[in-house]
Length: 496
Image (tube, rainbow, N blue to C red; front, side, top):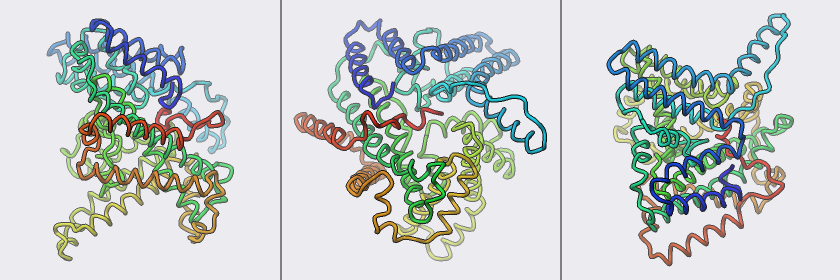
């Protein structure tokens, strides 16, 4: 079930209304049933995988709690519990990738390969709910949280439908207490519902008006059969629009998820904070997919030694984290390359930190000026956009070919001779896209300056809020990309 589907627009109001009016003791069971149904709408059979992750991590948590201070026993329980979840993730997401990689190596060495890929469908959102379960187990092992003894509440913690298939990846110490206090949620709070609805509508705007419109142009240029035809200016426009598309697609999903949860009385963590206004790669990853960045920091980077074991080890740990992050995003080498590029850029930032500070001091820029900050932001966006090409490409070969076309052909006139209007978006549609991006930039600038537009909105008179929400809904109806011939509406991060 997609957020931008008629099915969900019927499903969510029913779920929320019944959640608020049912006896409080039935709230957990009702939301859990709704969450399982939400996932089953995609594939009923694969619901067993979600239940397996829930049951194995719930049992593992109880065993870890019961082990007390018996370190060896706790370590064994943790290893088995994590292993079960990783084995499921590895089989469904990476087994065919491993087989294909081995097959290519054998073929290049002149041998014959007698095995072929398995017919396995990647479970929607498996990386998200498995990582959330693993984070819970590690936190119980560390003694950071107490194991949940109520199976229904724990199952809801893992399967809560707004964030089930594309995050944010919630932490047990932040979200589980909200599940435990589900009976204490106030049944009707108009401001809370308005805040949630506002976020949802903005998320739909990002997804349906911007991301899905940009996707039409991007898909045409990145077509594996035609991408070599587009170089220079067209290639740059498509690369920049993909940066916009993936941000609006993923952040749009997050805002809808946060809005859904907030309307019912739950607070999910912020997963994006103006990432394209970042002034460095480090700053970008502090603003992009914040829940995943924090997960890798706390459960991989720090356990590897972080920065505690010397400079060289620190750089190795950074590289490992980014390579694993690339692989998390997809079982293909071009995703690993994308992660590797970010790892290299992050390490280069560390290596050049002192020389850059010395340069700023030499030119009197010890306190960075607006122009210097603007340059940093522009450079960071440029580097992130170039890296996104390897993410969007179908293979490493296509990525390098595409990048070559971007840098070896100079034809800025194609931006003005009408060429860009021949790739799925006519002039009118392109203007709608540019105007929508301008709205996005303004909202992000306000957010960057710590101006909470949602809070400002809910402080307005109720008549104004209702009129504004209906106008915004009208914008989605008029300018959203949808219809029976539209088949690219699935959120990008559902595949991860």
